[in-house]
Length: 450
Image 1 (cartoon, rainbow, N blue to C red):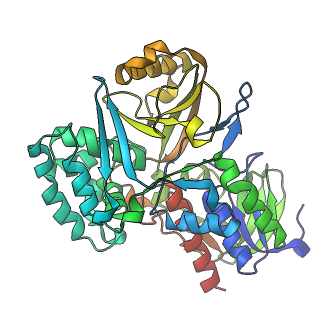
Image 2: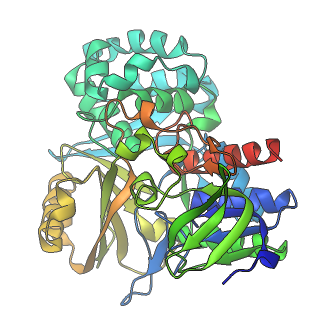
Image 3: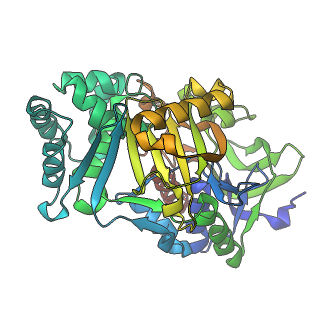
């Protein structure tokens, strides 16, 4: 039982990117912080673990970082792990389609933003001139938006597909260029995802500067990237990071939140409480009525990954987008993690995997084999030594039309309580960058209110 004598300046609920980022920033500002994580490990919905047979690291969902992830990079710089993020010098994405064809989006940095994107699209072999001509209208629209927070509210009620169609984008350019971006950034199908997050992403990546376009990957597992270093940072400054602490309710007195109580009856008191719990978890708790709201209608979108260990290399690139297939991306984990040996470790990703999340792992593996065979004819010469399916049913917020309006602003809430998390309305879809941005925003609100 935590006594009043152990009272913290700030209580942070959740040990993922948002929670640890907020706790680190509070500790930096001299606040005594206590972090409560319900799981027996840190990382929230972005963590890694060791494969029991190969001992190699597996992420619960493969994540791609971008140069525009400025809050994330600031957080990792503060805890001393930014060197684990490796950003490609060349702005390039390779694609393989279901007919065995290859294409590449290569954007020369020297041209500056957004001309580098225009050059890259013009050189795509899989698109006709008429496909590419429609980009002029989209370009004018994106340039008219001064910031990600000024995206017209009406876009929240259009799907990505509806908006792109209205912008005169051909079916083929949607399938070969925009759909992979939407799936990767929004973690849901363009047919059902709101256009708001998609427009925010396009602007952040392609219309700020060349650095924003660069792709980055973590050369270590997600947990090693930030959880241990963040814990050490917090504890070095007098804070605590506690695991297996599942909340039951918040302490409310006189219209103010003054801490939280766990299911085991432990009482943690604090001047300020930041909750980074996902909405589907938060709404299950006993909450003050002032915190109830439309955010409770937000729902999750799943990610399914397939890890493969092959007897020989299949791809040389760090990642390849797969077009016209159930699998959307294949990551060369051997290259990313710097593994040596004659075989290859691959991570295949299905974003917005609402259908696949309920499938038997053998069925998912069969689909992976089928898709790899279509996109990479040389796959027939390889032998799969081991495979593992990883399901994350609550990976991110599902950004369906109307959902952006339901997201509370990070740092809002009630006296003593502050919302945070990738799902809050940061001006970004629910990504790692949104998570860290929310952490900083919540801390700013705490500091402002004393």
